[in-house]
Length: 330
Image 1 (cartoon, rainbow, N blue to C red):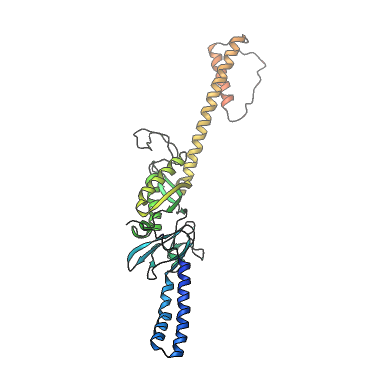
Image 2: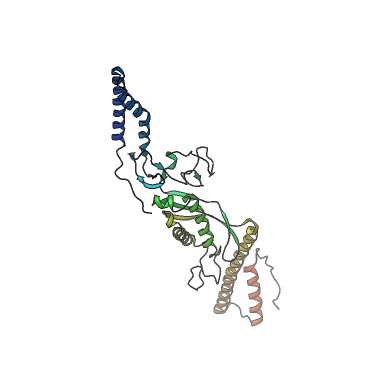
C-alpha cells in the first residue's frame, strides 16, 4: 500500500468561517421563519443546527513533524503531514494501533510518568498522531552469550523515525512493539558473533580469517552491524534506523568475579613478561660493560652467579637487601 499524502486539505480556517457563517444564517432564518410561521424553513434550519455539528468533526490540527493516518469506512483515505489546520471528510477517523503503546523511549512517556503497554492517552484523535521526529529507543539490558559462550549483559540505544506512515500503520500490528522486538533479536544475533575481549581463532567478520574483533574493543563496528541488522528487519514497517549505540556492557554477575581475576592474572603475566625482558637486557648490558672496561674477569661460573643475583634483584617484588662480603671471594 502506497502512502497518499493529502496536500489539498489545508483549508481548515476557510471551512471554519463558512460553517460558522452557515450557522449564523440558519439561526437568522429560524427566527425569521418563526415569525412568519414558515414551518418548512423552520424544519430545515433546526435540522441543520442539530446535524450540522457533524461537519465540525472534519477539522484536524497538526504540529510540526506530526502525521495523521485517516481511514474512511474501513478504507485508507490518506495521510496528513506537517503543521497546519486541515479539514477533511468528517466521517474520516484517525488510525494508529500503536497510539497507547508505551516503551522506554523518548516522547513515549505517559502523563503519569509510568512505562508500559496500554497506559497513557485515551483513544482520541490527538493520541492517534504519529510523530515523525527522531526517537530514541532504550530497551532493557539483555543477558546474551558471546562467541565464547560467556554470558554478558548488554544494552543499546536505537535512534529511529517513521518515514512511511502507511507501512507503519498497516503492514505491522504495532510498529513500536515490532521495533522493540526486532532490536532485541538483532542485538542477540550480532552479539553472539563477538567475544567480550579479543580472543584467538575467532572470526567475527565471516571471511574465514581470525581477527581481533570484540564487543569491548570494536564497539563502533558492532554498533554499525546492529544498526544494519535492525534496518533490514524493520524496512517493511516504514521505519528508518538513524543510529544504534551500545550503552551498557559488562559480564554477567555470576562470572564477573572470575573474569576480573582472569583479567588481573593476564595483566600480572604481561607485567612480569615486561619485567623479565627488561631485566635480561640490563644483565646483558652489565656483563658487556664489565667485559669492555676490564673491571673484573669473570669465568662462566661467576657469570652465572652474577646473572642469578641480578635477575633476583631486578625481578623481585621487594627491594633487595644487600649483604656486604668483606672477606675473600674464594
